[in-house]
Length: 271
Length: 105
Image (cartoon, rainbow over all chains, first blue to last red; front, side, top):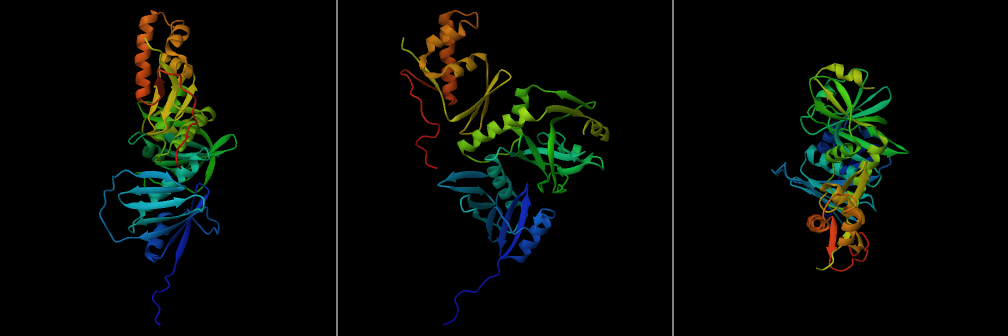
């Protein structure tokens, strides 16, 4: 009797962001190569993976790229949906699947969402901010679009290591917080370095006519931090835990307003 | 006039920071910053103390205001907080309930 199915090679790679290795399986070598290129510096040879995703590639389509992501939790299983992908992830078994076309943006969104879900249970978060390491300490520069994240990243001096120009990765560690490099880029389109350092300060960016740092009241610090957090889940427990994490963060990390003119002298105030 | 009882909605997250009370809705992540009067209502909303007593003992002692006017304003404010699902209001005492009781996860 002839064989009805052919064994298909299962290819995989491990993408480690924030110290969390995620193994991605695919049967398409071109997609694998695209991931290796997209996540260069974050692809590891680690045998260990905290999450395993099977990527099921679908034929090309033209979904709305601006459609909002929907993230829901039911019976121990997360469902992640956007116009361009659908994914499921079961934390107990550490496995999941992603259905998408062969593009780097969909899996990037899935990874961001999964990291926010994991971090939320550990007191950490992803936030809209650039971040860099200088003199062994990490500094975060938060702000909405046009606030100056890309500008401050572009002005960074040679002795500063850029972690990201767009999305900072914050993990609670002991009594403090650590920032990790991410491959999540903004306008600079330059991947962060895959390194980490304890966070020394969070600056809320504002453009002005001079470079200066001003203290801000704790309530404003908490509100600003919450406004800049990435959070997708429609889940009361995680919303509450992220809310409390933000307050915990502002009680342990100095938060100030950094007003700057767009030139490199602003970095004389940092570090 | 019937009594009105207030209880905190256990499905919101709340923190006081430097005198500011902030509340986040667990349903849609909306963030609220309460003013002084709303903070007093939130802090006093134990489900068993009627609103008129909260007004008499906590609001009229804090602000120079006529009790009847204070009660009218406090009731409006309590209903507004309830519309945002920050408080629960009832004409009967409100028994405490678990934050996620009865939910399927």
